[in-house]
Image (tube, rainbow over all chains, first blue to last red; front, top):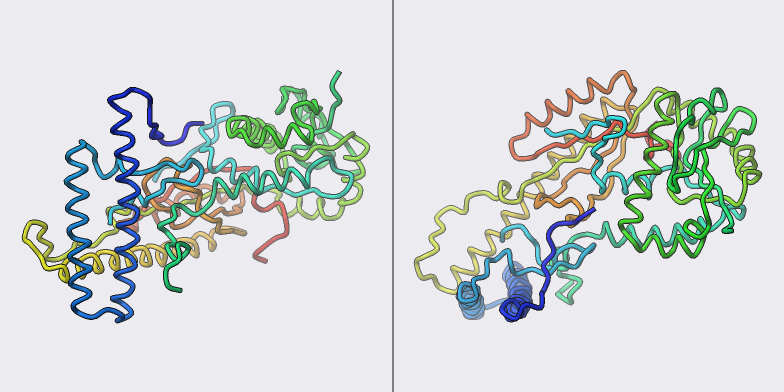
Length: 97
Length: 68
Length: 258
């Protein structure tokens, strides 16, 4: 039985850097998604002032843009940013946001 | 609709469907006359928990210390 | 020489039991035989305890390939035996020390096994899974214009709408899955919903919204298949997959729906 293709950080030097970068970006992406959900939840709860909403929204927007730039720079697609936890499934949800 | 039909020796069985049935289905026989079934059950249960756990951390971000 | 145990595959009626296991081989490539007590028989095979004993099983269950192969062989024996009469599949990895103990089992649970065999007689198990494609679930996000600069507020509101509409889409899919399950229950003797399998095992991107399994009269299997096909056509956004017929693994215990 084989599962879906597993990402490996292989030892070919050209790929090592790419592998490490994708690992780092994956973690950043995880944090971004977490923060986004936190922010939205607090908006739903009415716990943020207009100014706070604007500030958090801008931060998240800039973060998403930065992520896109970094991905492009390293030739990574959004699907590349994930970590296969084996039987536990992927770290990040694989459906589109 | 796709379906998987059993032909005698050449049955395409999705592993996930099969494991679900042989590990969690079937009659359970327990008692002190059975060798190892209670312990194997525990191994099986932990394996099943591992393979059938609900997807990723993000599915329940309350777990990560958000408001609740 | 390694000690041996007795691996149990299934419980069947004693009548013509030996004929039903002729030529079959099991998880250790061992010949399959029967242990008889009164009107019941256990379908069994001798297995070496070096592979199938207490410690060995612990070890082997950590190995998914071993589990997969053993599961297939276990199921193959049960399926072969099920061709000729009712069968109670036994959960994988049930190993007895000797035949005498197997006989005691049959004597001890004679009534319970007898009743179960009657209940399962002439019936098959069919699995039906319903999937939603996350991309297809999403509603169009109105006047989304990715390239115009937005305020932080507009951005956050857009993300909030996107996540909310995904949530709503999943809920609609869940309601539709419930409807499908109810329809299938009307064509079955019994049925259960199981937790969805982990997506890493399904090898699909799709989300499982229903993982159902149904006990159906063997002569109603065709009608059930047609019902599943009709349901598949009636839903635009969900896809259905049917598996089986299986031996009745999921209905070997206490009946759920009376």
